[in-house]
Image 1 (cartoon, rainbow, N blue to C red):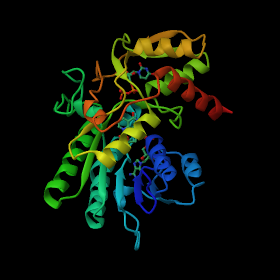
Image 2: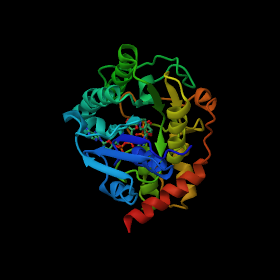
Image 3: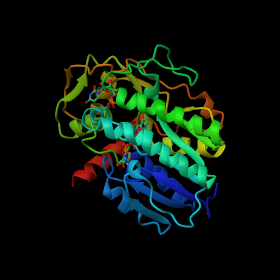
Image 4: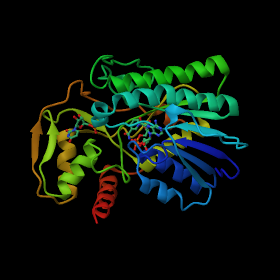
Amino acid sequence: MDHKGKNFLIAGAAGFVPSTVAQLYLDKGATVYGLDNFITGSKSNIELLSKYENFHFTECDITHGLPDFGDIKFHYILSLASPASPIDFKVIPLEIMTVNSIGTQNLLELAKDHGARFLEASTSEVYGDPEIHPQTEDYVGHVNPIGPRSCYDEAKRYAEALTMTYRRKYNVDTKIIRIFNTYGPRMRPDDGRVIPNFINQALEGRDITVYGDGSQTRSFCYVTDLANAIDHVLMLGDHMPYNIGNPDEYSIKETGELIVDALDSSSKLTYQELPKDDPKRRRPDINRVMKLGYLPKVTFAEGIERTAKFFREYKK
Ligand code: NAD
Ligand code: UDP
């Protein structure tokens, strides 16, 4: 679909997933306005997007209010600003809670005023340590409200509730996506999530740090597939939540072994303590989004190769 003449507001535009989504819409001819305070985002992503003449950026913390956009009318507002790595949960928990609550509400108010379609980027973390497998959207979750991950899980659950409330009370046209583990170029090397950790350890011949015995599972989605899934939901979806991701499931031990093999590395797996409340199994049921025509395309092997290329060049 061509998006010429459409104005998108992307909160978190300097981030890994949001900058990829911004690029997708810029490539489709849209005008994209990006907001970011760089708490976990990178200036290089903004430099890259700034090569498009229809990209406009304002540095701002969306919890402190939004810029004055004058006469601009937004057609789409994407709430993608939030740190997402478990290491951020320790370091910036209050920032995570406020961006998903106050920040999301500021964006919803703007969507109400502009009559814009609004998309909230929620997460598989709303399911907590799930008791059903694979996870379907009707599962209400198993979250520890006082655990070390709760600043993120509960903030995202609140953001979903806020989104549904704006729909019910003000009839805002809303969409909710629950993103499962995503990886790819533009992740920070020190992001702390498993794929950047393992790839950088493998590239440098360091030990691969498996937490626990490595039997816990995750299903990894390559970032351009994810951006494509977001587009399907934004353009074609209904207002109920959509799981988005890739259902191919790997144990963490297997993930380490695959990365070592794929990168022909001499690294060895080592085992460290498992963080508290670490979900044991995670795989999305993506039937709902597949009905909109989405299918993940990039295999894990191909995605690892492309991500490793990004990190090799990053170090130069
Ligand atoms: P990211 O940290 O790379 O991107 C988030 C961006 O938001 C960063 O650029 C950050 O600086 C910006 N930001 C944070 N607080 C802000 C504030 N108060 N004001 C302005 N900007 C702010 O993370 P990501 O992995 O790309 O995640 C993007 C979105 O997708 C987040 O909402 C995250 O919760 C969600 N998500 C991601 C994953 C994943 O696997 N990557 C999984 C589930 C959900
Ligand atoms: N993990 C690991 N070693 C690392 C980083 C993460 O074994 O260096 C594990 C982590 O305990 C979890 C899984 O990999 O079981 C995915 O972790 P990540 O932080 O990427 O995302 P999560 O799904 O936990 O939010």
